[in-house]
Length: 187
Image (cartoon, rainbow, N blue to C red; front, side, top):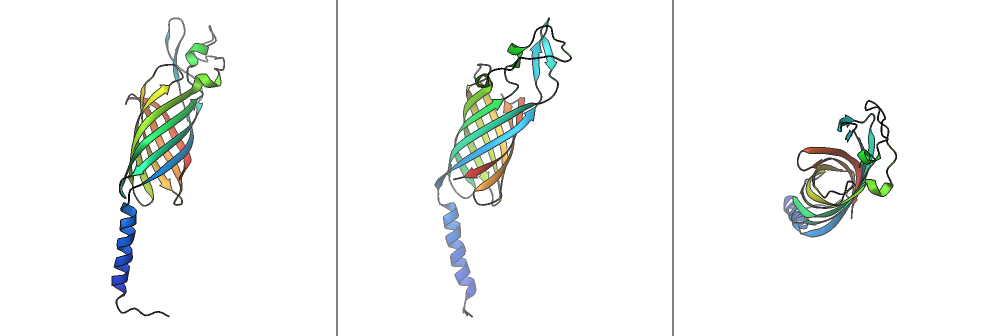
């Protein structure tokens, strides 16, 4: 059994050390893998017109983000984003003269559906959650067009290092792209 004459004073010193440790700038890296599904509108037919493809298409991605923690609330950094989209570039692989109500497509090659981008991120950190916003540029895009994209994600930490990732990705601030549902690790 221990006895202390002024226990509040000792707890205040420990709390101050924890605050100083939390505010200390440091580097970390978030690795996140995600998957989702999406609908796709393609421009096919004679005459060419927008057509909603039946069913849903898979999306899978990997994000590698080295970040600098500025204080206990804010972190900033860059990210390399890899994303495979099963519906990317389908218009080129349309089987001509198939019905626009039920269009058929040949399967595009894997690398024609892969995109690579770089993005800058800012993150608001809280004890259990983090909100991450990113602005990116697709260096390699399935259609060959380079374009800007944005992401907003919520990270829910299950442990100090493992988090669930829930987010959404837009193109050019208005074009819906896909959900980002996954898991990640902070190193």
